[in-house]
Structures are given as structure tokens and as C-alpha cells.
Length: 340
Image 1: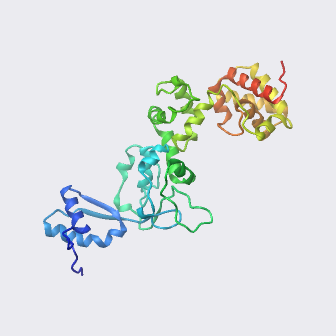
Image 2: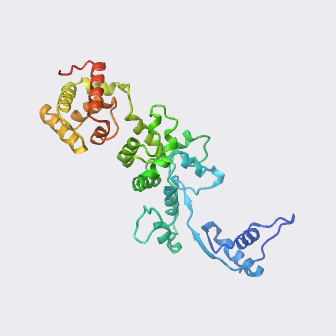
Image 3: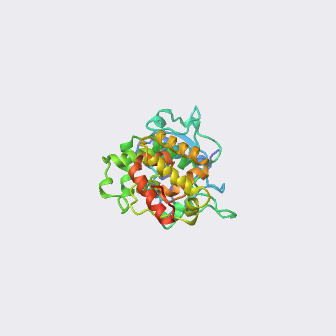
């Protein structure tokens, strides 16, 4: 039994149930998919559709969406504009895919659904009855407070992002899967303000940029991470980044590894990632070093850093001459003597 319910308030203002029925009918809505919290409104709205002579749409109710704290998401707790995710380097395809998985699963369990695959296989009957977790924002450690979702700027949003979010996984898959020209088109706005990247490179048709992005996109969770990778290839004044990095160059077998790598590189002509893998293996055989004690001195000498792209990917893009120049500079800066 449904008791009498208000459709127009005493001030003449229509109630939600009345307004939404008229609005949806005039817009010729055929399917209404909404949160389970509206389930109790549905029978009342059906009565209004019938009374007004409108076609009754199909109704479906998806499960609640909760944050990492397990509490229901609510705009009253604050909201983040979807445009903020665009500005943080997430593509529309990624966000659409992520939102579709909140309360819904595919028949075969696939989660990455590129292109028009999502449209082809989406079936509202597969919506889950259990709450879904919006895992984009991390829960503050040791806090019982709600996950914060209202921010004053992009920096705050970026700091609050959950690095293990499914959004990041889907974003990485999307960036890897998209046509490279589409990736470059979306990446370009993030490069424009970078003074450490040559102006002529900031072009979707630039072959150097294409080669770099093609090589590094497997590492990207979002497009804001790309400019630092791109800039690394155009460093002219290489600086040692930390005391730890200096230690890799000067301590233990570091000088020996750097010297041997320099000599073997100078007397060979590597072109591909396999060539550089073999070259570093040879350095390891000669010096008796492997793992961290082999690769970290080489990385420090060629990049000035202790972390970054895999060296066999980085080196072919930099090229032999630039690598030799970098080693000469870092060696001079740290006092390592190179063989003539």
C-alpha cells in the first residue's frame, strides 16, 4: 500500500517526485538508472506516470557507492569536479571505464574496456547489489574522519589521490592502448609550460617526442607524469641529484663500473635496447658486479639520479654521444678518473 503523498507544496512548488516525472517524460527518457536510495520513490513515480498519461520508463537501481572509509559518498561531504581529473592527466576514456565498474561487472570479468567495447557489452541486469568503493582518494592513516573530497586546488587533490586506485590502473592501460597520436594530442597541454623541453619538440608531429612517449607511456598512470620523462632527454646541464647518488658513483666498485661502462660504450656502437642490455652485461662480467652495484653507478653517471626509466629503454633514445658526454660531466663533477 502506498499512502497519499505530496506532489505540490503549500507554496505551489512541485515536490521532487512530481518534478522528476514531468521532466523525464518531456525529455523522453526511456531508462532511469539511479542509486538504490531512490527505490522507495519508484512506485510513487510510476503512479504519477500513469495518472499523467506518460509512457513509463524502465527503472534500475544501482548499489550505493562508498569511499575508502566505507561511508556513503555524499555531495554534502564535498565534491571534486570531474574537470579536475582532466587537469590531473586522466583521459575521458579512463574515467568512463572506471565509473562503469562502480556497481557493475562484465560477464567475463574484464575490467579494461577500451573503445566501444563497454557500450557493446553493458547490461544493466549485471548491476551489483553490494556497495561499490570509489577508491580514488586514500583514507588518512590513523583517522576515523571521512575521506576528504573537497579541495581548494589541484595540488591538494593530487596529494590525496590513492596511488593504488583502480583509476590509475585503468589510466595506465588506456594510455598504453590508445593510438599514439591521440596520446600526444592529449599530452601536449601538459608540455607547453615546461621550459626544459625545446619548443620545437612540443608538436604532435615531432618524431623525437613520438619516440620518447612511445617508449615511456607504459610507465604512466596519468599524463601529468609524462613531462618529467620527456624533459630527461633534453638535459644539457646534468646535475647530481643527491648524496645517495654521489655515493653510487664514488663508493665501493662504483668508479670501476662507470669507467668500464664508459670504455666499452666508447668502443662499441649500440643502437637498440638489446644492444645496451648486452653492453651492461659485459660490464658486469668484467667488474664482477650485478644488480644494484652494477646498474646504480651507471644510472647515476648517465642521469644524475638514483631512479627513473629502465636504462635499456632510456639509452637508445639518448644515443651514444650524449651518454658519453653525460658520463664525462658527472665524472668530472665527482672526481672519478676516466681512462683515455
